[in-house]
Amino acid sequence: MNENAPSRKPQASSPKPGIRRICVICGSLLLLSCLRLDSFLFDPTRVTEYFNPADMDSSWHVRWVIPDSLIEPVTLAGLTGNHIYGFFVRQPADTDCADGDCPRMGTVPGKPQSAESAKSADVTPNPQRVQSAESAKSADVTPNPQRVQSAESAKSADVTSADRFTVIYNHGNGQNINRYWGRVELLWEAGFDVFIYDYEGFGKSEGSPSGAACYADAEAALEYVRGRPDVVDSMVVYYAWSLGSFMACHLAADLRKPRCLILENPMASMSAVAKEGAVLGIPGSFLVDADFDNEARIPLVGCRTLVIYGKKDDTAVPERNALVLLDKANPSATTSYPVEDANHSDLPETMGYGEYERVVKAFIAGD
Image 1 (spheres, rainbow, N blue to C red):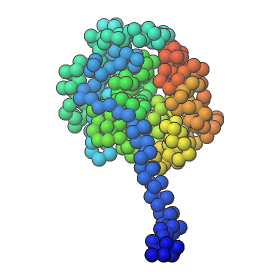
Image 2: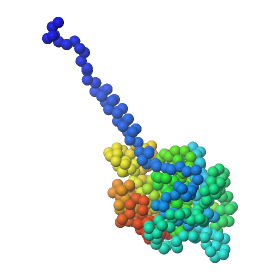
Image 3: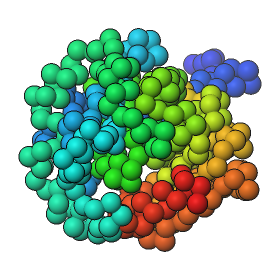
């Protein structure tokens, strides 16, 4: 055998440019599918009942100051008919104060309270807390077709609604209503009616969270609040924390202008969220199926807007979020309130409850 003869072993041919391009595209799509931010964006906790002491955390600063009689469980219909759960908290009417003792069990409204005292106040749930586990379970396990309260009972319960604002609270991306009940208490102590709801897949709400579902849930919340006979349409306020800013801006820009809009540590867009999630340089629209774009909507909200943010926020970094929105918003109708030492979740505590209440009340009143 001639060892110097050329080898007849077939040589591997390099892939054609077109095949290489297809491989790159497929690999990129596979990578993007692995990098989707749904799990980062939505971090719900499901519960079978709300306000169970075992599910509450002392860092949430819940003080159980709102009496059961002023809390109404509400059931709404979500995007595909899923049940969405929420609570409407009203101010005491004259009939509630007939004996001269209005049922406020917590700190005096407007009195500053430190984060430390708030924390010590809620280590053990108040025996008169919002709802016992059994009453909460019996109240809202089966959705009430009349949404818990009839129009007539709402009307008779509160005859002074013309003088009062109603806040729709759009919460953040984590946990469920339990996590945000301390915030509801602050707004209630400030003198507002408050409606808070859980997005699909959060708390007791059925389904799974998505951009479309969250928007539909917010729309259902607005429809419910506007349909109450004890709510004055021109006195409805949209309040949002973090992820909830997408829902509040959607309502304000795309559906109905509120009296005013308050954004606490808001997010600017999915691209900004992607950067906070360390997925750098990839458009947010590739990472989550959600039309979350406050940068595009903020110029269209058409109402007074307060952007209140912590300068040390490392979740929604101000330079990529709050400051971007302030730059895009109508300057003549927008107020900026930076809080020097606040992070993403401790803004009211860092401000002090008294100062937080003063700022929010003054802005809503238009002072």
